[in-house]
Length: 489
Image (cartoon, rainbow, N blue to C red; front, side, top):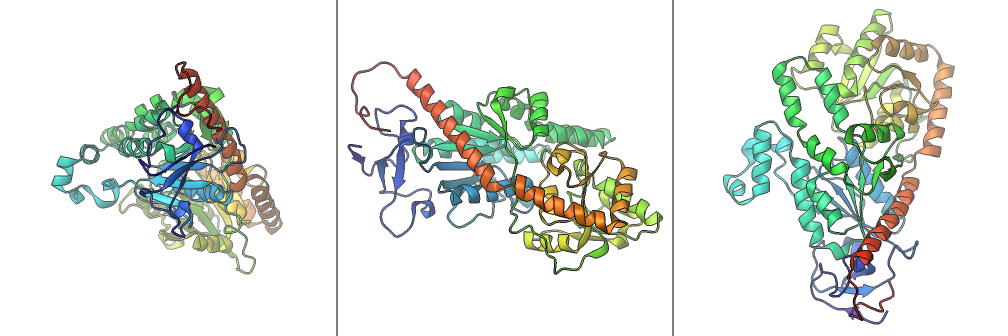
């Protein structure tokens, strides 16, 4: 290994190396008693020591940058994905830095969080932006104008910030894993030669289609189309990505159909579930008529209106079901209006902003769990309910039948009569509920492991690193001996 590079620019590759020979270096911070994974993102005075390249040593730990433009841990599957994937990768010995825009994820100790602030106007509103900030920062100005006109530009602005941050620190990472940003800035990272893997949970074109189908008003349909303008960029970027990972066979099919991605570039890797957290609680007494669902209250795709109609039918049959709904309806919105028309307000408990342990306890109290979505690219709520051993009814929307297998009752998406009948059958049959709950738990333990997901992704990362180094080598001009020659990577 010959020599050591001391001090200097902590973000630059050594002179004379190809664009990804810098992948052969591991940062070593001064001996301060802090492991490098806990060190600040920008630290002066550390040294870079040559080590064997990860693509030639299948056991070498990797330095991984995980990207998420919005990563709230309790309000969306993308934040959950980053939290548990980073935990599993860290547990397998890799160094993980999560690069995120707000809202920020809740991460384990030992996983570095690099915050890339934005205006976060969906949390703070248009009036929160300072005039001086809008004048000085073109990205902030773009976010403000987009929100003002009903758009959603956060994937693009995050991609711009992430590109600038990562390319100035390219030598600090072996691979970049983007969590569905699908922006021009992320594509620039791939073009610059950094190994890139991208997760697409499902194409948001499906969300747009369902939102338009559920809205009749011209102005509201116009707003839906305006908000989804970012899909033009995502479709264009997705087609140019070298390596795409998705979370189900159903999503793979939809990505090919809607985004036009080359089928050969897409790998399917199921999400996992924290089966130690999401678990049965036999000491908790089930409430005989309690039904639980996790759904965004006013998002048509989640099918909550179908469940509400099914609950009304069950009440009409003399079954006084009580709904525990993880979510919060918009005041005066379509869900609140439907609850009023169906006279269900007295039998619904809305729960929002709760931690996972509370959700586990609510599952333990419930006799049946329901995922009524019209479409899911994977369906984390279904897997979490299954891990808790709760008898489950799901729709056949998207990947839900694939994920549930024989461990749930499956009904046609959007069919309130079929949903009411499936719930009634389980309420009336305790033996069927017990058998279904046991199969659900066993299926989760066998099929949905974050450790397995992380190990498969690491193999994918190493392939991406090898391919990037191969391109860099083939693109390099012929030359005689130079400073980097002889370094055994």
